[in-house]
Amino acid sequence: MLKETDLLEQEVQDYYGRELQSSADLKTNACCTVTGLPDQIRAGLKKIHPEVLTRYYGCGLTIPTCLEGLRVLDLGSGSGRDCYLLSQLVGESGYVLGIDMTDEQLAVANRHREWHREQFGFSAANVDFVKGNIQDLRGAGIGDAEFDVIVSNCVVNLAADKRAVLSEAQRVLKEGGEFYFSDVYCDRRIPPELVNDRELYGECLSGALYWNDFLNLARQAGFGDPRIVESRRLTIDNESVQRKTEGYRFYSVTHRLFKLPALEPACEDYGQAVKYLGGVDEQPTRFQLDDHHLFELGKIVPVCGNSWLMLAATRYREFFEFYGDFSTHFGIFPGCGTEIPYQDRTEAEPAGSSTSSCC
Image 1 (cartoon, helix red, strand yellow):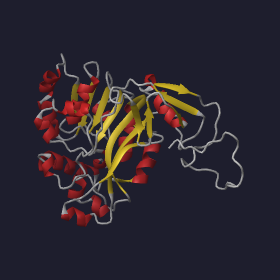
Image 2 (cartoon, helix red, strand yellow):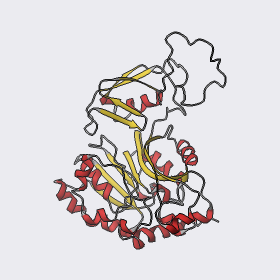
Image 3 (cartoon, one colour):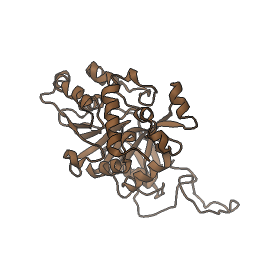
Image 4 (tube, helix red, strand yellow):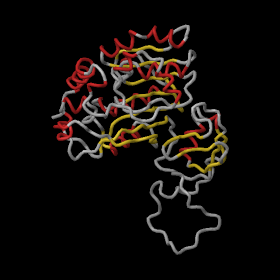
């Protein structure tokens, strides 16, 4: 039998509040960010207090673009590292709220709140921290459609009820907002005996969702067409942990999930296209939507209906020119979903047809 929820949560709090005193205490690289950092993020990290940096346990870069003036929520904010990065990016007109259930981590985050305000040169702090459970954001006083962006860094795997986390994220996001987060996944479902292993769970391994289970849960929660931003295979250098997890492969993946109810399960072709006009400070010449959509400045690119909406119905609209609408459906982009099971390959293609794929 799996651990009772209350016991699991208490063990997570103990692991991150008492057993781990810094990232050096981790036994694997699951909760370590190894991706190259943009210059803007490197500069922001230099303005963050050393104690906050020391108690960072993230597995990816969960800082999307175009955040100025937005309201951002960090699920499982820990010592506040990402919140204080976000604080600089949203600016004085924006707001950041971090929620965590571990007292020791919250104490570190709150202890340096005023220090960071002075460091950033703000007249008033734009960051708050609240104790709460990411599975029950309403219990922490967070209402419907309060935030433009939600981030989370290697925390969802630690939650007992992942479905609740995704549903709550969808509820508190504004229309057109996004949940941008990194987490650990497994190539198969993890059995109860490993889930119940305190060390493996605390190291962000045995709480990891099986890949397909995550995709199904995300769609059920209202996040159609989850997009991968980046991913990497995790290595486990601890001999004891290696033995326990033999046969299981773990991955750190950064996703972006948009709150757009019109998204379809696959890449449907409506003859649409977009052109990047520039203006995103972090990506002046090439805009990256995900790991297979990179838009060069000034180039008109065919896209599926979902990609069109992810740009046209979100905070990115002003940076693109849009072509087409949803009036005519031309089928599916080849390789992007279920196609007609039989096709006579000897039949001549219609004049002007294209087999180019959105993905």
